[in-house]
Length: 161
Image 1 (tube, rainbow, N blue to C red):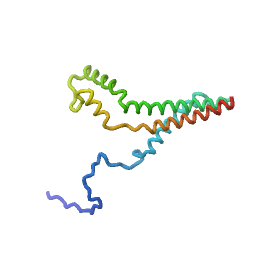
Image 2 (cartoon, rainbow, N blue to C red):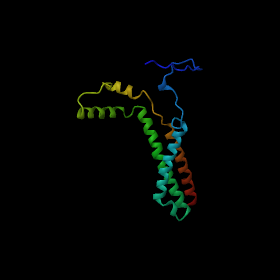
Image 3 (spheres, one colour):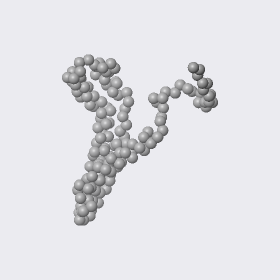
Image 4 (spheres, helix red, strand yellow):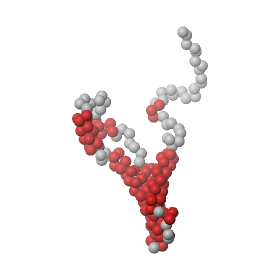
């Protein structure tokens, strides 16, 4: 069998040594806005859950409405912003020793030989774990937004009550 000759295309980019792993891939999921949209949506769902369970739509007076709105937005702020703060702490290495110890204990209990490529000591584990830093700023900013809404409705509650 003979190979068919492939058509040659003129390439504007003369640099053919492109590392695919570091190339930016387009699309909605790689967008910065997508992370914020997801974080705001999760916060809105949390706040909506609190609104429904606290009886926002059957509240009798303005003070109750403002109180429920403040509580809902504060709950969303604590959960979304708190998650961002935990990710920040984790990326700084706060939980590395705990996770290394738990991982080592589980290896002793369930598996006798380590897999190839696993770190041999804590230093290698820490270096391997912190090669890529997770992004967390969008969670903290979203939490601050919901906290600001909570403060606004708390002020309105205090003026009405």
